[in-house]
Amino acid sequence: MKINFFVNGEPFNFFDKEARIHRVGHLIQQCKNSNIEYKVWTSNFYHQKKKFFSEKDKNFEIIKSIGYKKNISILRIIDNFLLGIKIYFKLKKGNYKNDIFICSFPIPEVCFAVSLFCKKRGIPIIIDLRDLWPQVFYNLYQNKIINIIIKIIFFYQEIMNGFIFKNATSIFSITDTFLGYGLKYAKRKICKNDSIFYLAHSKPTFYEKEDIKINYNIPEDKIIICFFGVINIKKFDFLTLLKAIKNHNTNKFHFIICGDGDDSNIFDKEINNVTYLGWLNQKQISYIARNSHFGLAHYKPTIDFCSSIPNKIIEYFSYGLPIIHSLKGDTYNLLNNNHINYYYEYGDIDNFNLLLNKLSKGHKSKNINKINKIFANEFNSNIVYKNYLNKVYEIHKKKI
Image 1: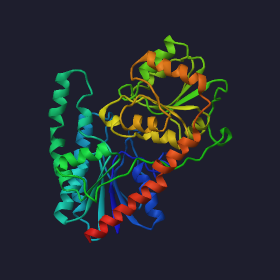
Image 2: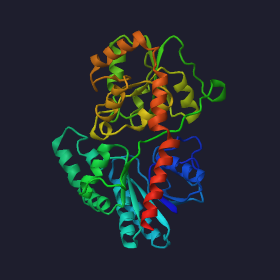
Image 3: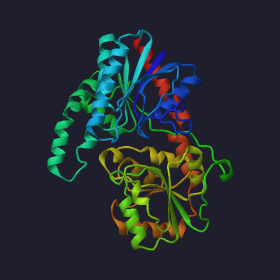
Image 4: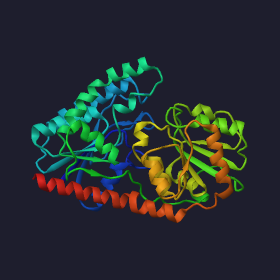
């Protein structure tokens, strides 16, 4: 069996040694451990850093991209279409007699091209559903006219989705809700080939300050709350955080913000009890996490985040950190059922401060053992992705 992975937007260590690998990165590591032949199809555009890379890897088919500056833009739509077309015509030159294809969804344009090729060649294809495109774009703005225009622009993806999921040999997904989204387009009920595999992380290695290059001393007399990720006020509730810090007494806390993004300028000026460190590598993040008391996952409660357990939740779990969050749905239920739910209402400054007051009285009870147990049982990449590949093998065996 040979697996062809089709993915765009994930970092890989052959072009960024410090990057934290995502789902396909973990899967190819499991392929190596199990001596499974694989190939990854991706573009030469580093989505997270919005730049091109030139490094090569023998197991990667790298397609030239035109790139884009913003995640939601006409240029990105064009790039997605071009990537799908290029992959389709490159696939036509190959022989895939003993192969199985796994296509990460999104992006629909690539999934459509690969699905069309698989249908013509009779190749089994698994659609790995991780986000609710195009539905996630439909309510981004408060202006109804703009939202109607967005629905018209992305209508072609609705048509593509119908073809993609109807012709999938199997649908894998990250939660029940996401799987239901794919089955709706497929117009069928769940079958034995369909499976749910949570997003997962490897257990991190912790580093001391002398092991890393970081010129920062973490306050020892404060409750440390850390954030790692994209600085984007449309995705995360940074405005409530900053208003709370400005208008209320948060002297018992110190917030360490790590990352970059469209709105990183909100941290240009010095803010009391906030340290902005910018983009850090994995070793530096590990050091910050080890010396923090809570992880901040103040997502905007959109349908995609409420219907999943996002990466940031699992990343904080891997560090043994309790999580401050603003999500209902799957994340809320998981944390609440395990009695480690530190929830506040998105955009509500008073509610956020009530939570901080509660945490200031009992922050030392970190429930580390409980968090570590949840991570080991549900989100450990070695277990999750080993089971994932076992299921892939089972599907492939049925089809040959």
